[in-house]
Image 1 (cartoon, helix red, strand yellow):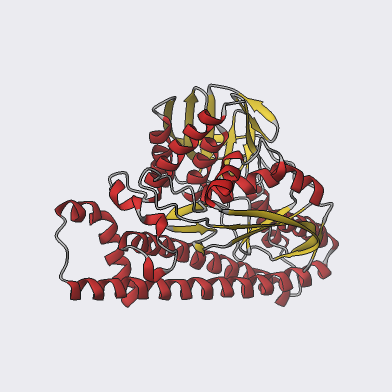
Image 2 (cartoon, chains in turn green, purple; image 1 turned 120 degrees about the horizontal axis):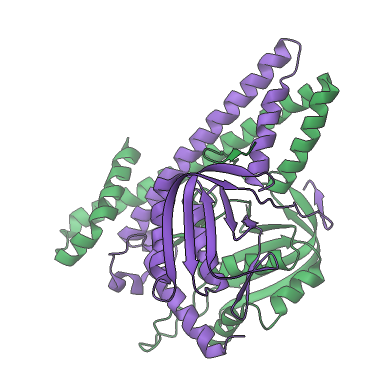
Length: 237
Length: 227
């Protein structure tokens, strides 16, 4: 139950950190080391659990699909509904896809170590990933992944401290690879348009931050590694 | 088009706002933020706040994944029971179909949530940030001035005009969000606090609101099924 203990500890830390900081009374070094290690251990355990849960979900999805396929063989009514369901799964990102598209590569630049420049412009922020994904959708992308994580209808990018998280707390770290299926010329045209991503491009020039793309006739995108639960939104009528 | 310097200033403002949002708690110190992106994103090099926030998020995500697993287990049991009895449970499949149509934004929906009214001009990235915060807080359906929004909906600025999937929307903006108001509220407050220096933002919790607009799924032309 070290995870539970650490979760409580983490919650306590988050809520009390500001106060602790103001007081600015450092813990004795030995305590701090032990606490640091406990926190990092629980991240490792929770990430192991996260992976195991996703693995279990994928196994269950396979079993559900087998049950659906079998059901569809029983009646034509079921078969019709099942065909619609399969289409919705493709739209929702629950199906692996392949085809032509673009691979975009991003990496942090160099810290200018300039006291007058505290902008952190040399690092890739989650907003950069979000902006690129947005331009790709606007340029006709049909499916997108970021570091292998499929962008699905409810995907959010998010900061947890310095960590960039996406889809059920999957931690992304640089270098980043964004993969998009669609017309390679149209996608490259969108990214290359000087009106788009102007700020990222200027940071790329100033800080040596990496931002490039290459076209490919064959790319493979994995399915979303979890599923969807709807708890509040009910269909109307 | 905005001038480069205006865009630069707006982006800089965004970075500051984002840094604040990053810590999720408005009162955490800028002092601490200064160094945060500078550390490598490996666990060993992270400050305790980052690790603690990561633990919170992992814990929340794992709970959600446990619920997803339970729902799938139940669905499989339902399908199997009908198959064992020599039939087929069309309702179990219909239920999943409905869920995915809601997720894909293809059916009108209703439920509890927030109505957010924004008076004034906001930029594409500001709306993106707000949408991101709301999705992260479990938003299940979103619409803005008659446009249903899912993650593949493009949001772009053309001068002072906001384009949602190419459709212009103008002030006042009315953002409807369905989800748990207890979770959506703080997320909306966070976005509002970074916008409120320039525009008027009103957030009202609703026990019942309706989103009637739908998204038409984009046809796959270049993408093919399978690996």
